[in-house]
Image (cartoon, rainbow, N blue to C red; front, top):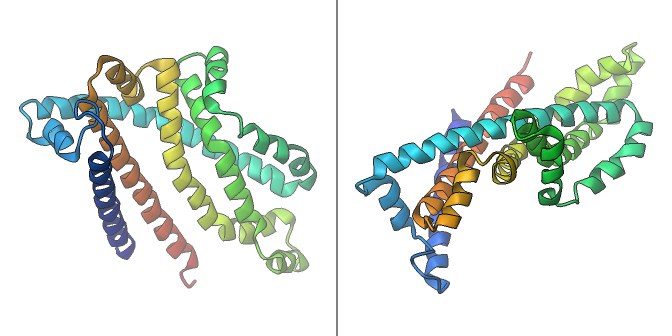
Length: 258
């Protein structure tokens, strides 16, 4: 409950901060009000305007599509990161061979790689998942691997000294020690998977908020564009906080006296 309360306060604070910075930015930057919409304009579009209900329904439908696309990249990216981090943990040789290459590949701008991935995996679910996973996997992998590697060596050696195998030491010591770090990877992946979904929708599927925002920019529908960005930002903050609450619950459970 305390963790949930902290998350609510954090979410509220983040939203207030965004509104303040947004308002100051609009006031300082000399941009036409036709292009740059204020919080009041978005509020009118989504809440108080005559067509607010229809506008909310339209954005919500596209948001659901984007979140589904993001879930593909989130799940696939974390699964790949977890699998590769375990492989690297049990084999230093494999880690030394491939980790520098994996890290270097992450430096390649995804906007240049995404069209190639679309050609290979098509524009459907698989292509969307691969693009999202490609953005998620490397940061998640490095975070997860760091969590496992930071396990106190003396704890692992104690399990081995009492007859436990390397796998047992991992299961009993390394993995529980790495759980907070793995949740940190999940929290980062929540937002990066949304970026991957938007990129896939921009370059491949044309669906979801990504495709709609691209059309809005081309059709000068700036009120809907800004409203979509606000809704997506708030959604990411909420999901991030949900993962944080789950992390706190799992960590408390694992650290509870037995």
